[in-house]
Image (cartoon, rainbow, N blue to C red; front, side, top):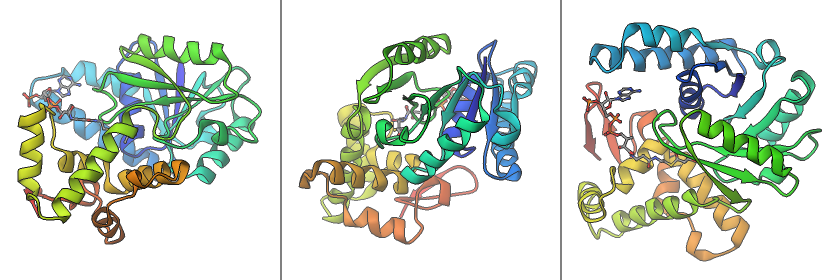
Amino acid sequence: MKVGVIGAGTMGQGIAKAFAQVEGYTVALCDIKQEWAENGKAKIEKGYARLVSKGKLTQEKVDAILASIEPGLKENLCADCDLIVEAAFENMEVKQNTFRELDAICKEGCIFASNTSSLSITEIGKGVNRPVVGMHFFNPADRMKLIEVIAGVNTPAEVVERIKEISVEIGKSPVQVNEAAGFVVNRILIPMINEAAFIKMEGVSNIAGIDTAMKLGANHPMGPLELGDYIGLDICLAIMDVLYKETGDSKYRACPLIRKMVRGGNLGVKSGKGFYVYNADRTKTPV
Ligand code: 3HC
């Protein structure tokens, strides 16, 4: 099966790995510039090189995975794809335009799925001549087991079922979710990160204290502030804003501290600074 992954950023790279690690799947890793797609593949290679050097994976296995990921433009690579997983910029217009363009490129029968983290699947599918379904991966997408499979208002049941089957084929556990802002995980997880930012802003505890408290007090693998940095504070903010806009409920108001940090370009791991500063030796220090 050939999968077109649209967007070679963090999520796109992880999704490409999730498919390419499974025999029988090849991936077209696409972005709007050839160079961006190639950069995405180079980052994937770098990650695997680290695992090989630690003895976690063999070079042979990594070579086989890398050989099944081709970077490039969707116009050149997606005509024969069986499945598209769109992981482009989290913006309705960008996603709608991407699928409209793909509609003209992809063969009949190719399934259109979006990895949107909170936008309406029904709205993303507007003006597209085939159904769109949600296939929501979690970062790091090659390791996290869950896939939220989201049925939009117009998504046929058989498309939802097929995505569930594919999820199982690639070793994931699907959970079907009806369309709603934030679906299940982000509706719970992102307000938690937002609340942690309020706690920091109010001076209830410091960054390390908040993260340690949740790691040791709730057995979370990462504290909420380091997780916010890891997801990207811009993504967290966008999700809070969607939750607020869709529900009108003030419990979803974004923390002003996160908004301020995003405005200042302090997005977390990807920008080198968020609640923590990320050092070249892969250590981090609370700001
Ligand atoms: N094959 C073999 N070994 C591998 C491997 C692979 N593909 N990948 C990593 N390993 C190895 C590592 O080298 C490491 O070995 P070491 O301990 O000897 O160094 C070991 O496996 C563990 O490595 P991890 O990188 O997995 O480290 P952790 O065990 O600390 O787990 C984590 C990292 C999975 C990120 C964990 O901290 C975690 O689960 N964090 C929470 C993540 C989370 O909540 N994600 C959801 C975000 S929300 C989202 O994405 C939705 C979106 O819409 C916003």
